[in-house]
Image 1 (cartoon, rainbow, N blue to C red):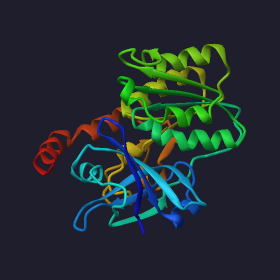
Image 2 (tube, rainbow, N blue to C red):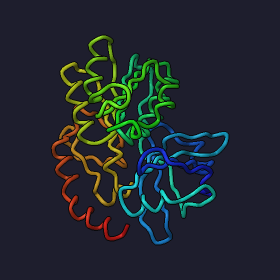
Image 3 (cartoon, rainbow, N blue to C red):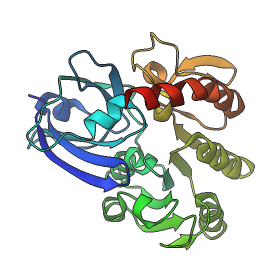
Length: 271
C-alpha cells in the first residue's frame, strides 16, 4: 500500500506523484487533502489531493520542495513507498451549479485548483480558468485545466507564455466582458489577497483555499489559525476553503512571516 505508481518532474522543484490508495480514492472529494509521512522518524505533512481515480485506485499529489521532508519526498521514484498516508481530510469544496465560475491558480496552487475546477465543470458550470507562474516552466496543470474549462488563460510574469502580467489583471479583463458568478482562488497568500480585493468591489462571492498555511493537518499545532469574519478558524479542520472577503489576509501574512528566518536556517541545516 502507498506504492508510488508514477513519479515525474512537473516544474522546477515540483514533482507529480500517483500513489496507490484505493480507499482514499473512493472517498475523496474536491478540496480535500491527505497527511503523508515519508520517513519512519519524519514529520507528517498535509498535501492536497490533485486528482484521483476510484476505479484504478490511485490519488495524485503535486509536491514542491520547500523543506527537508518535501525535498526527501521529491527524490522518491516509481516503485518506492510512503511510510503512511491518512485521508481524505478537510471539508470538501462547495460544488453546485453557480453559473459562470472563474478559477484562479498561481504556481503550485493550480494543482489545488484543478480538482475544484473539474468538479464545478462536472456540475454544469461554465468554468474560466486563469493560471499563472513566473515563467513558462512554472505554469502547471495547463492541459488538465483546459479539459474542464470553457476558457483558459495562462499568465506569466515575464511574458514567456500566454498573457504577460498578473492573474488579477486577466481576471479584471474577464469580469469586464462576462458575468462571473463566483471566483475560486488557490496559490500564494499575496495572490489570493489580490484576487479578493479585485472581486470585492463587484460583490462576487470569492473563495480562497488556505492549504498553503497548513502545518500538521490536525488542528493541534495551531499553525494554520486564521481570522475569518472576526472568528478564529483552523484551515485544516474548518477549511481549507473560506470566504476570501472575510479572511484577514494582513494578519495571516504577518503570522506566516513570523518564523521565516528560523525556517530558512532550519531547512538549510537539514537538507
